[in-house]
Image (cartoon, rainbow, N blue to C red; front, side, top):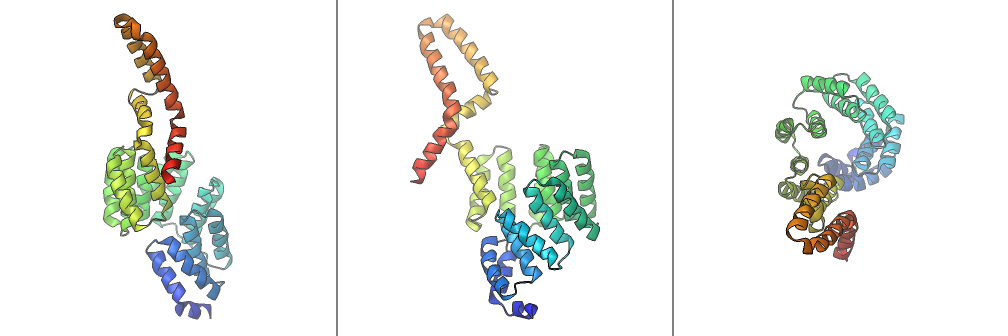
Length: 293
């Protein structure tokens, strides 16, 4: 009866349409309505769980995912989703057990193996992570999930040459324009090309203004490039606080030798500069507050 009700449900059809487009906010609205028409349907529950997870509602996603299993939809992909939810809650052991359940159901699924590889890297098992990722790539080197996790592993281990190669492969196989733009933006951001990163992430924001990852990255770029943090960026270029004080000592010596009358002004100015670099995050918050009013 429920299956027949869903086939005739406008909300289910729209929900699935938005779900397939990765538009999870819109999908969630219609799937909630569809669930009222078929309250025990595990497929609707699974899609809702995934939507809640992508929208950052982890507790709701967990409850729905457990309900899916209890309703009898026991597949490797349900366990993979459960693992992702548990991983986001930093329940590392439980997440690993869920992935092992997924692999018990389908030991040849490259996306799940890649997910397991990333979990192992996050928990410090680098050798195991490398072996798992190699197996995932052996099974399907062009799988979008495999490339997704390979991309983030490359970022963590700072393998810039591999980052570019993985990104190129990901862009070639990924159908969703939003995910392509996010990956290109992230890769540019982590090599400090903020102009390219912002161009792509703004395009991603226009496609999906509700995407939390896009908003986080755009906020980070704004913070990294804002004039308020110019002194902090100068300190970074000097090699950090140690480099800053080394430069200070060198300039102080030169000033004391060539212009001793300006020694006091220079010292006061440098102290003010140093104090400002400590309070600049507070200044930035005040500027953002004023700007939002």
